[in-house]
Length: 543
Image (cartoon, rainbow, N blue to C red):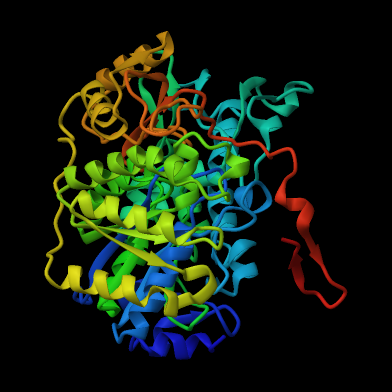
Protein backbone atom coordinates (compact mmCIF):
# COMPACT_ATOMS: atom_id res chain seq x y z
CA UNK A 1 0.00 0.00 0.00
CA UNK A 2 1.02 3.59 -0.62
CA UNK A 3 0.91 6.12 2.21
CA UNK A 4 -2.51 7.75 2.13
CA UNK A 5 -0.98 11.20 1.70
CA UNK A 6 0.57 10.01 -1.58
CA UNK A 7 -2.75 8.53 -2.72
CA UNK A 8 -4.53 11.82 -2.00
CA UNK A 9 -1.75 13.78 -3.69
CA UNK A 10 -2.51 11.95 -6.96
CA UNK A 11 -5.81 13.88 -6.98
CA UNK A 12 -4.13 17.14 -5.88
CA UNK A 13 -5.81 17.00 -2.47
CA UNK A 14 -4.14 19.39 -0.04
CA UNK A 15 -2.54 17.41 2.85
CA UNK A 16 -3.87 20.05 5.24
CA UNK A 17 -7.41 18.92 4.33
CA UNK A 18 -6.72 15.35 5.43
CA UNK A 19 -7.11 13.81 8.88
CA UNK A 20 -5.01 10.60 8.75
CA UNK A 21 -6.15 7.50 10.65
CA UNK A 22 -2.74 5.83 10.64
CA UNK A 23 -0.66 5.51 7.44
CA UNK A 24 -3.27 4.15 5.04
CA UNK A 25 -6.62 5.75 5.90
CA UNK A 26 -7.81 9.33 6.21
CA UNK A 27 -10.87 11.52 6.46
CA UNK A 28 -11.37 14.53 4.21
CA UNK A 29 -12.47 17.82 5.74
CA UNK A 30 -15.92 18.94 4.54
CA UNK A 31 -14.58 22.38 3.64
CA UNK A 32 -12.09 20.79 1.22
CA UNK A 33 -14.80 20.28 -1.41
CA UNK A 34 -17.70 22.39 -0.18
CA UNK A 35 -17.16 25.20 -2.69
CA UNK A 36 -14.91 23.35 -5.12
CA UNK A 37 -16.33 23.20 -8.68
CA UNK A 38 -17.39 19.81 -10.00
CA UNK A 39 -14.61 18.46 -12.20
CA UNK A 40 -15.61 14.94 -13.17
CA UNK A 41 -18.35 12.77 -14.60
CA UNK A 42 -20.13 10.00 -12.73
CA UNK A 43 -20.50 6.37 -13.84
CA UNK A 44 -22.97 4.05 -12.08
CA UNK A 45 -22.36 0.30 -11.67
CA UNK A 46 -25.35 -1.96 -11.09
CA UNK A 47 -26.08 -5.65 -11.69
CA UNK A 48 -28.56 -8.31 -12.71
CA UNK A 49 -30.40 -10.23 -9.96
CA UNK A 50 -27.57 -11.93 -8.05
CA UNK A 51 -26.93 -15.36 -6.62
CA UNK A 52 -26.81 -15.42 -2.79
CA UNK A 53 -23.04 -14.86 -2.89
CA UNK A 54 -23.29 -11.79 -5.15
CA UNK A 55 -21.93 -11.28 -8.65
CA UNK A 56 -18.83 -9.21 -7.87
CA UNK A 57 -20.33 -5.77 -8.40
CA UNK A 58 -17.90 -4.10 -5.98
CA UNK A 59 -15.00 -6.10 -7.39
CA UNK A 60 -15.96 -5.01 -10.92
CA UNK A 61 -16.34 -1.38 -9.80
CA UNK A 62 -12.84 -1.40 -8.34
CA UNK A 63 -11.42 -3.25 -11.34
CA UNK A 64 -13.02 -0.68 -13.67
CA UNK A 65 -11.51 2.23 -11.72
CA UNK A 66 -8.11 0.54 -11.90
CA UNK A 67 -8.58 -0.11 -15.62
CA UNK A 68 -9.40 3.57 -16.17
CA UNK A 69 -6.21 4.54 -14.34
CA UNK A 70 -4.20 2.16 -16.52
CA UNK A 71 -5.45 3.84 -19.70
CA UNK A 72 -4.56 7.27 -18.36
CA UNK A 73 -7.86 8.51 -16.88
CA UNK A 74 -7.76 10.42 -13.61
CA UNK A 75 -10.27 8.23 -11.78
CA UNK A 76 -11.62 7.46 -8.33
CA UNK A 77 -14.16 5.14 -6.77
CA UNK A 78 -17.04 6.14 -4.49
CA UNK A 79 -18.20 3.12 -2.50
CA UNK A 80 -20.25 2.09 0.52
CA UNK A 81 -18.68 0.84 3.74
CA UNK A 82 -19.25 -2.84 4.60
CA UNK A 83 -21.55 -3.81 7.47
CA UNK A 84 -20.41 -6.39 10.01
CA UNK A 85 -23.67 -8.27 9.31
CA UNK A 86 -22.65 -9.56 5.86
CA UNK A 87 -18.95 -9.67 6.83
CA UNK A 88 -19.67 -12.28 9.52
CA UNK A 89 -22.80 -13.63 7.82
CA UNK A 90 -23.13 -14.72 4.19
CA UNK A 91 -20.46 -12.81 2.25
CA UNK A 92 -17.40 -12.58 4.49
CA UNK A 93 -16.67 -9.00 3.38
CA UNK A 94 -17.74 -6.11 1.19
CA UNK A 95 -14.51 -4.54 0.04
CA UNK A 96 -14.08 -6.24 -3.34
CA UNK A 97 -11.89 -9.28 -3.85
CA UNK A 98 -8.75 -10.75 -5.36
CA UNK A 99 -6.80 -8.20 -7.40
CA UNK A 100 -9.57 -5.60 -7.06
CA UNK A 101 -10.02 -4.65 -3.41
CA UNK A 102 -10.05 -1.49 -1.36
CA UNK A 103 -7.26 -1.46 1.21
CA UNK A 104 -6.57 -1.98 4.05
CA UNK A 105 -9.30 -4.57 3.45
CA UNK A 106 -9.59 -6.05 6.95
CA UNK A 107 -9.73 -2.59 8.53
CA UNK A 108 -12.47 -1.53 6.12
CA UNK A 109 -14.43 -4.76 6.65
CA UNK A 110 -14.19 -4.52 10.43
CA UNK A 111 -14.37 -1.17 12.25
CA UNK A 112 -12.86 1.13 9.59
CA UNK A 113 -12.75 4.70 10.91
CA UNK A 114 -15.60 4.22 13.36
CA UNK A 115 -18.48 5.53 11.22
CA UNK A 116 -20.83 2.60 11.87
CA UNK A 117 -20.16 2.81 15.60
CA UNK A 118 -20.94 6.53 15.61
CA UNK A 119 -24.18 5.97 13.72
CA UNK A 120 -25.16 3.14 16.07
CA UNK A 121 -24.42 5.35 19.09
CA UNK A 122 -26.35 8.34 17.76
CA UNK A 123 -29.35 6.15 16.92
CA UNK A 124 -29.37 4.44 20.32
CA UNK A 125 -28.86 7.72 22.16
CA UNK A 126 -32.14 8.91 20.67
CA UNK A 127 -33.80 5.64 21.73
CA UNK A 128 -32.51 6.08 25.28
CA UNK A 129 -33.75 9.69 25.39
CA UNK A 130 -37.19 8.60 24.16
CA UNK A 131 -37.51 6.06 26.98
CA UNK A 132 -36.06 8.53 29.47
CA UNK A 133 -38.68 11.17 28.66
CA UNK A 134 -41.42 8.57 29.10
CA UNK A 135 -39.98 7.42 32.43
CA UNK A 136 -39.15 10.78 34.03
CA UNK A 137 -42.32 12.65 33.20
CA UNK A 138 -40.56 15.07 30.82
CA UNK A 139 -42.81 13.98 27.97
CA UNK A 140 -43.90 17.49 27.02
CA UNK A 141 -44.53 16.42 23.42
CA UNK A 142 -47.21 13.97 24.57
CA UNK A 143 -45.55 10.90 23.06
CA UNK A 144 -47.82 7.89 23.51
CA UNK A 145 -45.78 4.92 24.92
CA UNK A 146 -47.97 2.60 22.83
CA UNK A 147 -47.07 4.45 19.62
CA UNK A 148 -43.27 4.70 19.86
CA UNK A 149 -41.80 3.68 16.49
CA UNK A 150 -38.07 4.28 17.13
CA UNK A 151 -36.26 0.97 17.65
CA UNK A 152 -32.63 0.36 18.56
CA UNK A 153 -29.89 -0.84 16.17
CA UNK A 154 -26.79 -3.00 16.21
CA UNK A 155 -24.33 -3.69 13.37
CA UNK A 156 -24.75 -7.45 13.42
CA UNK A 157 -27.13 -10.05 12.03
CA UNK A 158 -29.09 -11.11 15.12
CA UNK A 159 -32.60 -12.48 14.55
CA UNK A 160 -33.18 -12.90 18.32
CA UNK A 161 -33.36 -9.11 18.69
CA UNK A 162 -36.04 -8.46 16.07
CA UNK A 163 -38.81 -8.31 18.67
CA UNK A 164 -38.13 -7.66 22.36
CA UNK A 165 -39.79 -6.27 25.49
CA UNK A 166 -37.98 -3.58 27.48
CA UNK A 167 -38.56 -1.85 30.81
CA UNK A 168 -39.10 -5.03 32.83
CA UNK A 169 -37.98 -5.35 36.44
CA UNK A 170 -40.00 -2.74 38.30
CA UNK A 171 -40.94 0.93 38.26
CA UNK A 172 -37.31 2.13 38.34
CA UNK A 173 -36.49 0.29 35.10
CA UNK A 174 -38.66 2.35 32.79
CA UNK A 175 -42.01 1.78 31.12
CA UNK A 176 -42.47 -1.77 29.78
CA UNK A 177 -43.21 -1.85 26.06
CA UNK A 178 -42.57 -3.91 22.95
CA UNK A 179 -39.80 -2.82 20.60
CA UNK A 180 -36.90 -4.42 18.71
CA UNK A 181 -33.61 -3.96 16.89
CA UNK A 182 -32.84 -3.22 13.24
CA UNK A 183 -29.38 -3.62 11.72
CA UNK A 184 -27.35 -0.38 11.65
CA UNK A 185 -27.35 -0.33 7.85
CA UNK A 186 -31.15 0.09 8.04
CA UNK A 187 -30.96 2.92 10.59
CA UNK A 188 -32.54 6.20 9.55
CA UNK A 189 -29.45 7.89 11.03
CA UNK A 190 -27.37 6.02 8.42
CA UNK A 191 -29.66 7.31 5.68
CA UNK A 192 -29.54 10.84 7.12
CA UNK A 193 -25.74 10.84 7.17
CA UNK A 194 -25.57 9.55 3.59
CA UNK A 195 -28.11 12.02 2.19
CA UNK A 196 -27.06 15.11 4.18
CA UNK A 197 -25.36 17.94 2.33
CA UNK A 198 -23.21 19.43 5.08
CA UNK A 199 -23.65 19.77 8.84
CA UNK A 200 -26.61 22.23 8.82
CA UNK A 201 -28.55 19.83 6.58
CA UNK A 202 -27.47 16.89 8.77
CA UNK A 203 -28.91 18.57 11.89
CA UNK A 204 -32.11 19.58 10.09
CA UNK A 205 -32.65 15.99 8.95
CA UNK A 206 -31.89 14.59 12.41
CA UNK A 207 -34.46 16.99 13.84
CA UNK A 208 -37.15 15.74 11.44
CA UNK A 209 -36.79 12.10 12.52
CA UNK A 210 -40.16 10.87 13.80
CA UNK A 211 -39.82 8.70 16.92
CA UNK A 212 -43.53 8.03 17.47
CA UNK A 213 -46.95 9.63 17.75
CA UNK A 214 -49.21 11.25 20.30
CA UNK A 215 -52.50 9.64 21.29
CA UNK A 216 -54.22 11.82 18.67
CA UNK A 217 -51.82 10.69 15.92
CA UNK A 218 -49.51 13.72 15.74
CA UNK A 219 -45.85 12.87 14.96
CA UNK A 220 -43.21 13.48 17.64
CA UNK A 221 -39.71 14.30 16.39
CA UNK A 222 -36.14 14.04 17.65
CA UNK A 223 -36.10 17.84 17.84
CA UNK A 224 -38.94 17.73 20.37
CA UNK A 225 -37.00 15.12 22.38
CA UNK A 226 -34.05 17.61 22.34
CA UNK A 227 -31.64 14.97 21.03
CA UNK A 228 -30.36 16.65 17.87
CA UNK A 229 -27.29 18.41 19.29
CA UNK A 230 -25.93 15.32 21.02
CA UNK A 231 -26.64 13.10 18.00
CA UNK A 232 -24.82 15.52 15.72
CA UNK A 233 -21.89 15.65 18.15
CA UNK A 234 -21.58 11.86 17.97
CA UNK A 235 -21.51 12.12 14.16
CA UNK A 236 -18.91 14.92 14.04
CA UNK A 237 -16.20 12.68 12.54
CA UNK A 238 -18.47 10.16 10.83
CA UNK A 239 -19.93 12.83 8.53
CA UNK A 240 -16.53 13.34 6.84
CA UNK A 241 -15.76 11.12 3.80
CA UNK A 242 -13.05 8.48 4.13
CA UNK A 243 -10.20 8.11 1.63
CA UNK A 244 -8.43 4.80 1.08
CA UNK A 245 -6.91 3.08 -1.98
CA UNK A 246 -7.48 0.15 -4.27
CA UNK A 247 -5.03 -2.72 -4.68
CA UNK A 248 -3.32 -0.70 -7.41
CA UNK A 249 -3.21 2.56 -5.46
CA UNK A 250 -6.18 4.30 -7.09
CA UNK A 251 -8.05 6.66 -4.68
CA UNK A 252 -11.33 5.38 -3.25
CA UNK A 253 -13.85 7.42 -1.25
CA UNK A 254 -15.58 4.86 1.01
CA UNK A 255 -18.33 6.35 3.15
CA UNK A 256 -21.73 5.28 4.49
CA UNK A 257 -23.33 1.88 4.15
CA UNK A 258 -27.11 1.62 3.75
CA UNK A 259 -28.33 -1.71 2.34
CA UNK A 260 -30.29 -1.49 -0.92
CA UNK A 261 -32.89 -4.14 -0.02
CA UNK A 262 -34.00 -2.34 3.18
CA UNK A 263 -32.66 1.21 2.67
CA UNK A 264 -31.47 3.35 -0.26
CA UNK A 265 -28.26 1.43 -0.94
CA UNK A 266 -25.72 4.08 -1.97
CA UNK A 267 -22.63 5.68 -0.46
CA UNK A 268 -22.87 9.20 0.93
CA UNK A 269 -23.64 12.25 -1.17
CA UNK A 270 -20.62 13.88 0.49
CA UNK A 271 -18.26 11.15 -0.77
CA UNK A 272 -19.66 11.33 -4.32
CA UNK A 273 -19.37 15.12 -4.40
CA UNK A 274 -15.83 14.96 -3.01
CA UNK A 275 -14.77 12.44 -5.64
CA UNK A 276 -16.37 14.49 -8.44
CA UNK A 277 -14.44 17.53 -7.23
CA UNK A 278 -11.04 15.88 -7.74
CA UNK A 279 -11.34 13.11 -10.37
CA UNK A 280 -12.28 13.15 -14.07
CA UNK A 281 -14.29 9.90 -13.93
CA UNK A 282 -15.87 8.68 -10.70
CA UNK A 283 -17.27 5.16 -10.54
CA UNK A 284 -19.92 4.48 -7.92
CA UNK A 285 -22.24 1.55 -7.31
CA UNK A 286 -25.79 0.96 -6.12
CA UNK A 287 -26.48 -2.12 -4.02
CA UNK A 288 -27.85 -5.41 -5.33
CA UNK A 289 -29.65 -5.44 -8.70
CA UNK A 290 -30.81 -2.49 -10.79
CA UNK A 291 -34.48 -2.65 -9.76
CA UNK A 292 -33.41 -2.21 -6.12
CA UNK A 293 -30.31 -0.06 -5.56
CA UNK A 294 -30.16 1.71 -8.91
CA UNK A 295 -33.84 2.73 -8.91
CA UNK A 296 -33.29 4.31 -5.49
CA UNK A 297 -30.03 5.87 -6.69
CA UNK A 298 -31.87 7.74 -9.42
CA UNK A 299 -35.16 8.51 -7.66
CA UNK A 300 -33.71 9.41 -4.24
CA UNK A 301 -29.94 9.86 -4.22
CA UNK A 302 -29.55 11.85 -7.45
CA UNK A 303 -32.51 14.07 -6.56
CA UNK A 304 -31.11 14.98 -3.14
CA UNK A 305 -27.49 15.11 -4.34
CA UNK A 306 -28.09 17.15 -7.47
CA UNK A 307 -26.03 14.92 -9.75
CA UNK A 308 -26.55 12.32 -12.49
CA UNK A 309 -24.41 9.60 -14.09
CA UNK A 310 -23.36 9.72 -17.73
CA UNK A 311 -23.83 5.96 -18.18
CA UNK A 312 -24.65 2.74 -16.34
CA UNK A 313 -22.53 -0.42 -16.28
CA UNK A 314 -24.60 -3.58 -15.72
CA UNK A 315 -22.60 -6.43 -14.18
CA UNK A 316 -23.67 -9.89 -15.32
CA UNK A 317 -22.22 -13.32 -14.68
CA UNK A 318 -22.69 -16.54 -16.57
CA UNK A 319 -23.34 -18.40 -13.31
CA UNK A 320 -26.21 -16.09 -12.27
CA UNK A 321 -27.79 -16.37 -15.70
CA UNK A 322 -27.65 -20.17 -15.48
CA UNK A 323 -29.33 -19.98 -12.08
CA UNK A 324 -32.10 -17.83 -13.58
CA UNK A 325 -32.33 -20.38 -16.39
CA UNK A 326 -33.29 -23.09 -13.94
CA UNK A 327 -29.91 -24.68 -13.15
CA UNK A 328 -29.52 -25.61 -9.45
CA UNK A 329 -27.28 -23.16 -7.60
CA UNK A 330 -24.82 -25.92 -6.68
CA UNK A 331 -24.31 -26.70 -10.38
CA UNK A 332 -23.89 -23.22 -11.89
CA UNK A 333 -20.16 -23.82 -12.29
CA UNK A 334 -20.88 -26.55 -14.87
CA UNK A 335 -21.02 -25.56 -18.58
CA UNK A 336 -24.60 -25.16 -19.79
CA UNK A 337 -25.25 -22.74 -22.64
CA UNK A 338 -28.99 -23.57 -22.93
CA UNK A 339 -29.55 -22.77 -19.23
CA UNK A 340 -27.68 -19.50 -19.62
CA UNK A 341 -29.76 -18.56 -22.65
CA UNK A 342 -32.96 -19.24 -20.71
CA UNK A 343 -31.73 -16.97 -17.92
CA UNK A 344 -31.12 -14.03 -20.27
CA UNK A 345 -34.70 -12.86 -19.66
CA UNK A 346 -33.49 -11.52 -16.31
CA UNK A 347 -30.73 -9.48 -17.97
CA UNK A 348 -33.17 -8.20 -20.58
CA UNK A 349 -35.48 -6.84 -17.89
CA UNK A 350 -32.63 -4.94 -16.25
CA UNK A 351 -31.57 -3.48 -19.60
CA UNK A 352 -35.17 -2.34 -20.13
CA UNK A 353 -35.12 -0.72 -16.68
CA UNK A 354 -31.90 1.14 -17.43
CA UNK A 355 -33.40 2.51 -20.63
CA UNK A 356 -36.46 3.75 -18.72
CA UNK A 357 -34.12 6.17 -16.95
CA UNK A 358 -32.69 7.30 -20.30
CA UNK A 359 -29.24 5.91 -19.52
CA UNK A 360 -26.63 4.63 -21.99
CA UNK A 361 -25.59 1.14 -20.93
CA UNK A 362 -22.71 -1.30 -21.25
CA UNK A 363 -22.76 -4.86 -19.87
CA UNK A 364 -19.69 -5.97 -17.91
CA UNK A 365 -19.36 -9.76 -17.93
CA UNK A 366 -17.59 -10.56 -14.67
CA UNK A 367 -15.74 -13.64 -15.84
CA UNK A 368 -15.25 -16.64 -13.56
CA UNK A 369 -12.74 -19.42 -14.04
CA UNK A 370 -15.46 -21.99 -14.82
CA UNK A 371 -16.99 -19.89 -17.63
CA UNK A 372 -16.46 -21.36 -21.09
CA UNK A 373 -15.60 -19.42 -24.24
CA UNK A 374 -18.86 -20.63 -25.78
CA UNK A 375 -20.90 -19.21 -22.88
CA UNK A 376 -19.11 -15.85 -23.00
CA UNK A 377 -19.54 -15.62 -26.77
CA UNK A 378 -23.27 -16.46 -26.57
CA UNK A 379 -23.77 -13.78 -23.92
CA UNK A 380 -21.89 -11.17 -25.96
CA UNK A 381 -23.94 -11.99 -29.07
CA UNK A 382 -27.22 -11.73 -27.18
CA UNK A 383 -26.27 -8.32 -25.80
CA UNK A 384 -25.35 -7.21 -29.31
CA UNK A 385 -28.83 -8.24 -30.45
CA UNK A 386 -30.23 -5.94 -27.75
CA UNK A 387 -28.21 -3.05 -29.13
CA UNK A 388 -25.72 -2.84 -26.26
CA UNK A 389 -22.07 -3.73 -25.98
CA UNK A 390 -20.92 -6.48 -23.62
CA UNK A 391 -17.30 -6.66 -22.48
CA UNK A 392 -15.71 -9.55 -20.59
CA UNK A 393 -13.72 -8.41 -17.56
CA UNK A 394 -11.47 -10.22 -15.11
CA UNK A 395 -11.19 -7.88 -12.11
CA UNK A 396 -10.70 -10.61 -9.51
CA UNK A 397 -7.79 -12.40 -11.19
CA UNK A 398 -6.15 -9.58 -13.16
CA UNK A 399 -7.20 -6.30 -11.53
CA UNK A 400 -6.99 -3.23 -13.75
CA UNK A 401 -5.22 -5.15 -16.52
CA UNK A 402 -8.26 -7.41 -16.80
CA UNK A 403 -10.57 -4.40 -17.14
CA UNK A 404 -8.79 -2.13 -19.62
CA UNK A 405 -11.14 -3.06 -22.49
CA UNK A 406 -14.15 -2.34 -20.30
CA UNK A 407 -12.51 0.88 -19.15
CA UNK A 408 -11.94 2.06 -22.71
CA UNK A 409 -15.59 1.41 -23.61
CA UNK A 410 -16.79 3.28 -20.51
CA UNK A 411 -14.37 6.16 -21.12
CA UNK A 412 -15.58 6.61 -24.71
CA UNK A 413 -19.24 6.29 -23.70
CA UNK A 414 -18.77 8.87 -20.95
CA UNK A 415 -16.97 11.24 -23.33
CA UNK A 416 -19.92 11.40 -25.70
CA UNK A 417 -22.61 11.48 -22.97
CA UNK A 418 -23.79 14.20 -20.63
CA UNK A 419 -25.00 13.72 -17.05
CA UNK A 420 -28.76 13.14 -17.27
CA UNK A 421 -31.57 10.79 -16.40
CA UNK A 422 -35.36 10.62 -16.55
CA UNK A 423 -36.99 10.19 -13.11
CA UNK A 424 -39.32 7.21 -12.84
CA UNK A 425 -42.03 9.17 -11.01
CA UNK A 426 -42.97 12.61 -9.74
CA UNK A 427 -42.54 12.97 -5.98
CA UNK A 428 -45.81 14.88 -5.75
CA UNK A 429 -47.85 11.81 -6.73
CA UNK A 430 -49.72 9.95 -3.95
CA UNK A 431 -47.65 7.28 -2.18
CA UNK A 432 -49.83 4.46 -3.49
CA UNK A 433 -49.30 5.60 -7.07
CA UNK A 434 -45.52 5.86 -6.62
CA UNK A 435 -45.35 2.34 -5.20
CA UNK A 436 -47.43 1.06 -8.11
CA UNK A 437 -45.14 2.71 -10.67
CA UNK A 438 -41.98 1.18 -9.17
CA UNK A 439 -43.60 -2.25 -8.83
CA UNK A 440 -44.95 -2.21 -12.37
CA UNK A 441 -42.04 -0.58 -14.21
CA UNK A 442 -39.04 -1.96 -12.28
CA UNK A 443 -40.23 -5.33 -10.99
CA UNK A 444 -42.76 -6.19 -13.70
CA UNK A 445 -45.58 -6.72 -11.17
CA UNK A 446 -49.19 -7.07 -12.26
CA UNK A 447 -50.46 -5.09 -9.25
CA UNK A 448 -49.75 -4.16 -5.62
CA UNK A 449 -51.68 -5.64 -2.71
CA UNK A 450 -51.78 -4.24 0.85
CA UNK A 451 -52.24 -5.94 4.20
CA UNK A 452 -54.59 -4.26 6.66
CA UNK A 453 -51.62 -2.67 8.41
CA UNK A 454 -50.07 -1.57 5.10
CA UNK A 455 -53.29 0.17 4.08
CA UNK A 456 -53.58 1.81 7.52
CA UNK A 457 -49.97 3.07 7.33
CA UNK A 458 -50.60 4.43 3.84
CA UNK A 459 -53.65 6.40 4.94
CA UNK A 460 -51.89 7.71 8.08
CA UNK A 461 -48.84 8.95 6.14
CA UNK A 462 -50.96 10.78 3.58
CA UNK A 463 -53.11 12.30 6.33
CA UNK A 464 -50.00 13.44 8.27
CA UNK A 465 -48.60 15.31 5.26
CA UNK A 466 -45.84 12.90 4.20
CA UNK A 467 -47.37 11.93 0.86
CA UNK A 468 -44.87 14.03 -1.13
CA UNK A 469 -41.84 11.98 -0.11
CA UNK A 470 -40.22 9.46 -2.49
CA UNK A 471 -40.59 5.74 -1.82
CA UNK A 472 -37.70 3.49 -0.76
CA UNK A 473 -39.17 0.02 -1.14
CA UNK A 474 -37.75 -2.77 1.03
CA UNK A 475 -37.74 -5.95 -1.07
CA UNK A 476 -35.82 -9.19 -1.42
CA UNK A 477 -32.67 -8.93 -3.56
CA UNK A 478 -33.01 -12.52 -4.74
CA UNK A 479 -35.81 -11.92 -7.25
CA UNK A 480 -37.31 -9.18 -9.39
CA UNK A 481 -40.50 -9.91 -7.41
CA UNK A 482 -41.00 -9.80 -3.64
CA UNK A 483 -40.82 -13.63 -3.56
CA UNK A 484 -37.19 -14.84 -3.40
CA UNK A 485 -38.06 -18.17 -5.04
CA UNK A 486 -39.24 -16.57 -8.31
CA UNK A 487 -36.10 -16.47 -10.46
CA UNK A 488 -35.55 -15.32 -14.03
CA UNK A 489 -38.17 -12.79 -15.16
CA UNK A 490 -41.37 -13.54 -13.22
CA UNK A 491 -44.73 -12.72 -14.79
CA UNK A 492 -48.25 -12.09 -13.45
CA UNK A 493 -47.27 -11.64 -9.82
CA UNK A 494 -48.48 -9.35 -7.04
CA UNK A 495 -46.26 -7.29 -4.75
CA UNK A 496 -47.60 -7.29 -1.18
CA UNK A 497 -46.93 -4.24 1.00
CA UNK A 498 -46.88 -5.49 4.58
CA UNK A 499 -46.34 -2.12 6.28
CA UNK A 500 -44.97 1.33 5.49
CA UNK A 501 -42.44 2.99 7.76
CA UNK A 502 -41.66 6.69 7.81
CA UNK A 503 -38.11 8.04 7.49
CA UNK A 504 -38.90 11.76 7.62
CA UNK A 505 -35.33 12.74 8.44
CA UNK A 506 -33.90 10.79 5.54
CA UNK A 507 -36.70 12.16 3.40
CA UNK A 508 -38.55 9.06 2.19
CA UNK A 509 -41.10 6.44 3.20
CA UNK A 510 -40.23 2.73 3.37
CA UNK A 511 -42.88 0.30 2.06
CA UNK A 512 -41.89 -3.16 3.34
CA UNK A 513 -42.83 -5.96 0.97
CA UNK A 514 -43.05 -9.73 1.24
CA UNK A 515 -41.01 -11.30 4.05
CA UNK A 516 -38.06 -8.89 3.95
CA UNK A 517 -36.54 -8.15 7.39
CA UNK A 518 -34.76 -5.01 8.58
CA UNK A 519 -32.77 -7.25 10.94
CA UNK A 520 -31.24 -10.20 9.05
CA UNK A 521 -30.23 -13.47 10.69
CA UNK A 522 -26.98 -15.40 10.38
CA UNK A 523 -26.89 -18.36 7.96
CA UNK A 524 -26.47 -21.93 9.21
CA UNK A 525 -22.69 -21.71 8.72
CA UNK A 526 -21.79 -18.03 9.18
CA UNK A 527 -18.57 -16.60 7.82
CA UNK A 528 -17.74 -15.62 11.42
CA UNK A 529 -16.43 -19.18 11.93
CA UNK A 530 -13.66 -18.49 9.39
CA UNK A 531 -12.07 -15.46 11.07
CA UNK A 532 -9.20 -15.59 13.54
CA UNK A 533 -6.45 -13.47 15.08
CA UNK A 534 -2.84 -14.71 15.01
CA UNK A 535 -0.44 -14.39 17.92
CA UNK A 536 1.18 -11.54 16.03
CA UNK A 537 -2.09 -9.62 15.92
CA UNK A 538 -2.98 -10.23 12.26
CA UNK A 539 -6.63 -10.87 11.34
CA UNK A 540 -6.96 -13.94 9.11
CA UNK A 541 -9.82 -15.37 7.07
CA UNK A 542 -10.02 -18.94 5.80
CA UNK A 543 -11.66 -19.08 2.36
